[in-house]
Image (cartoon, rainbow, N blue to C red):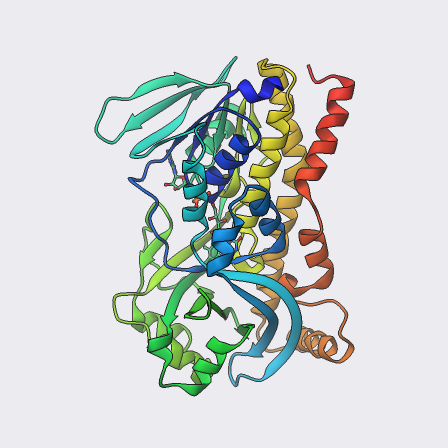
Amino acid sequence: MDEGQGLHVVIIGAGIGGLASALALAKHGIHRIDVYEVASNLGFVGAGIQLAPNMVRILQRLGCWEPIAREATELKIASIRQSSDDKELSRVDFAHIEERYGTPHMLYNACKEEKAISFHFNSSCTIKSWEPRPVYTVTPLDGAPYDGHADVVLAADGIKSSVRSRILKELDVDAEITDSGQSAYRIMLTRAQMANDPEMLELLESDQVTRWIGEQRHVIAYPISNKTIYNISTAHPDIHFAAAPSATYTTRGSKEDMLDSFKDFCPVVQRMLNLVPDGEVCEWKLRVHSPLPTWVGGCVALVGDACHPTLPHLAQGAAQAIEDAGVLAVVLSMLPNQSPSSINKALKIYEFLRKERAETLVDLAAASGRALHLGEGAEREQRDKQFAALVRLKKGPNPDKYLDAEVQEMIMGTDVMKIAQDEMRRALEVGID
Ligand SMILES: Cc1cc2nc3c(=O)[nH]c(=O)nc-3n(C[C@H](O)[C@H](O)[C@H](O)COP(=O)(O)OP(=O)(O)OC[C@H]3O[C@@H](n4cnc5c(N)ncnc54)[C@H](O)[C@@H]3O)c2cc1C
């Protein structure tokens, strides 16, 4: 057995990043994993998510792809349309899987099968110190705080990560939360709600993801859950957002404000938004922060949105959290000993392999948003010429980076776990401690 497999790993947060890390570590033989989650259980978020092939590859290796695939919808075409009149600007063949936001539950079910993993809900957790080994403090909802020791702490505590603040404070560096100025409505319409509208039903029956783009805003929509639900997500200026968003950056939005935000969009979009029942509008504030100087402090590492929150325009936030998990499992399980200095080196290899790639995608997602949201003018004309050329020539750069062939190859064609294994082998040859 590699010594790494004897590590005690504590994971803070049971979102996609924390759950995927726990499962990946257990599948790599690490046999003591404690997951602390402040919430009482895994709440269901009413939204679909796009599962890009780089995420699917890792979920397959973790053995939890089958149940997700059973409920997913495979999409083959992307249609980019002008928001005002529904005119198609571009049409691209692509392969993505769309699903109801079930991944956390499937990951959780798979984690529950692993003896190595213990869950502690209703338990807020943070780092107290990390020299020489990490000490963490757990504050249970109904109990007194207590401290614990671990060999490694992985902080998957989301965009508002307290561990991130703690690490940066200790290193005396700053990373600003950036106000993207955007928020998103996430909506799911059932087949029954759409039944009287042939145009909407056609969209629900299609294998197509449709993006309606306009100045400063867009709507993206696709069928999910075996085409029983039409999933809609928007991006728009957050002028209506409540002054103090919740811990998860979500709020109950107003239907009137939502309709107002998209009042100059084509009739089919307006009809879809109109179907949302009053009181069921959920708005997400979209936040990013400037790149961090490091993701690692001693034997503590950040994971997922805690270190690389990504605007949704590239559909890669969760995928990147899962890539983090896969790489962490490889580097930690291959450790030849459990010394803090070796653990730190393995975490630094994780950072080296992941940081640049994740931050490139953060930038690409932001750039894509800017291109999609252009107003009237020369830049927009140029963009639309590129969209048209893609239809004619079937190749060339795509202003929507989520559909750009080169970007897709870079994202989907990279097997981060394989690269991590090679990198770790090289490090072990030279000597890691
Ligand atoms: C509109 C929108 C659309 C998106 N679409 C896609 C998509 O199509 N494809 C894709 O790949 N990604 C998508 N994403 C991104 C994706 O949802 C996130 O990147 C991903 O869920 C982040 O997971 P995480 O585990 O890092 O963080 P989170 O999901 O935020 O989880 C953090 C967890 O930590 C817990 N926690 C926080 N503090 C503590 C503490 N002190 N102690 C204990 N627990 C704590 C929280 O309760 C939470 O459960 C989208 C995001 C948005 C907003």
